[in-house]
Length: 496
Image (cartoon, rainbow, N blue to C red; front, side, top):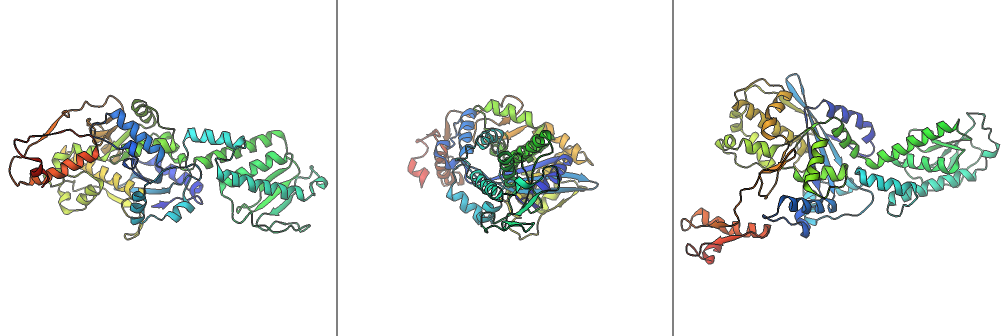
């Protein structure tokens, strides 16, 4: 697993794009700073319509941010499947949001370090947010963007430093090598003609985004002077008397604007790669994950459920969900004692010897780029690990389908194509009167009755002992209608 941070993101981006491009499918997962049920107005009920549920989740997704994003790229190489996993801590440097204390404790209990998250978290922005931020940045309206306000202060300080030198009137613009180089960490002129009072303003190497924004401000404010960084550490500021020509100036400024835009986008650039290559995405119980993928990296979520479905299906060629595939294979799995379809339950099942009877004898070995066992990163609720396990469960469930169909020796690409008719472009809809979200057409109609009756068939049965949990569980979920047959039992019998 590769941990992606601000210091290595741009260097890793070509590698990530190559892994995505070559993948038969890509597993993905988010970890969040809260769940929709933590937002009172978004509490789900069993009688929500799909449109109502979407609007509740939309409100929650726009309030509660993600803190991790993970992808796992599955590619077949000869007789093995190579999985390349990437973990992206997500941190927005501006704006405000909500979180739940229970989610923070849960993440902390699972080894998530919040200090590291704040220091090494990667920015992200959807297209609507990016457009609004760029308009503010270039209009110098930075009050709502504290990180850019700080960068502007650094640029202003560097500008005053340059202007205070008083050397540029004697510099000959015709001499291309006639320039001054200033060490911004010590405020010392390299040619030793003058030293300035040290300052702690430039304490550390600027990020790529900071460097490009500072250069943009300096070159715009100090034209015709040309300002650039003269070393990889971005601590040496080189100032020359003039640009070669107006065209060069405009082209360099365009490059800086693009770098600023890419710096704000951050991890959203990975989403663009996923869309550009029309990858096959695999999630687990992934309705909320897909809504976060859209809101965090693409655009603000549409007002309606139908608009969202249409937009998602336009972005990706095929979407799979392991829970849908597990339900399709429920009969076969139940014959081997596996009735739960949660991700952790499927992982545990396929780690047991009994699962080998379901799988073909000849299958590709999965080769991971994951840390050693015992490392906190190799746990559920690390988004890269969950993404990898989601992909592995999809692969193994697909093998079960293949064996049931009495097929063999399918390549990974052929295997994915084989299971597509069973589960493609369908996402589970938890506690909704519809089988699934159909991304490429109308959702199937529900079959839930208006009234559900619970009848005690045998005194002191296991069924009776479950009734209190059913009653309180459904009552907590929402306005659930239950008609008790008091001729069969009393409420005190039910709650005993």
